[in-house]
Image (cartoon, rainbow, N blue to C red; front, side, top):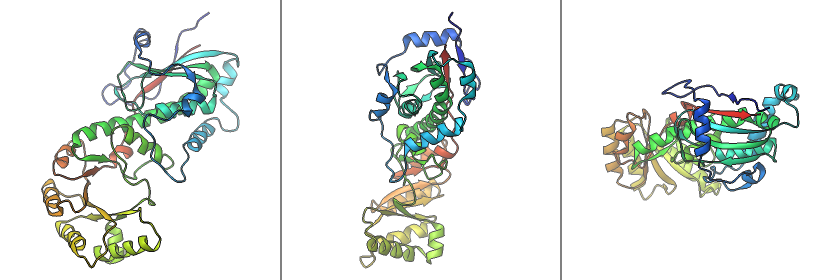
Length: 346
């Protein structure tokens, strides 16, 4: 006999209606109206396809390794004792992912990677892709195969997807308000999830700041203090990059006052000072008035980046100052996970 659907609910995180329930009738209605953008196919084949939006490159980071670690920490050296003890190995099921809040989907491709790592023979069908909007009450994925496999993957899929979708949703809101400035995140990410957090920013319509300490120089207040000033720090940095043949690594200099902005401009205009690698000036914790004045003074010599005190309430005004970029750590360190649940019919 067919048993009723068993909802595998994730912790509620919707800021508007926490814990709001979606009725079984509504779920069934949405399933019937779901727009399929991919035919059901083996998870292994789906995961092997190029993602709609590629993750940022990193020389040592392995997404597959992160997925394996997440799955291994969940089952330890024993396995999923709940499913192993209650569900026969031969049981096949169909499960769906349900949006319990409206937002931007992120983690679709990663979800297929997780499912394939658990059981490559699971069949998955996506109704929405990364970067697309999902509405509260909408079913946007269906997976069929071993019930044990689906339930082993369930929590890891949701943990990745809820966080990434939360980041993408927040990024989309900030990016829309910041225009024409480009929205960036920072390195304030969860250790071990750096590339996934920054991938979610790309999916949400933002751009990536430097990936780590290796791909861009940021001369900040502590570097300036330790080096003996802005001029000394820039000179030492240019020398280091030249000596180590790091011609693709660029320099960003932080300025906290208008006097520091003028110091950087003087260096850029001095033909006797090597500044060819300096491509960006960070305007840190400045007022909107000072940022506007600084952009005028810089006059296109380098790109500009606003940082500090960036919120949804302030980002639009900052974006109108003429800065090239706006960076905010809140995109990844203060994210609200998007509420998504998995529901399985046995």
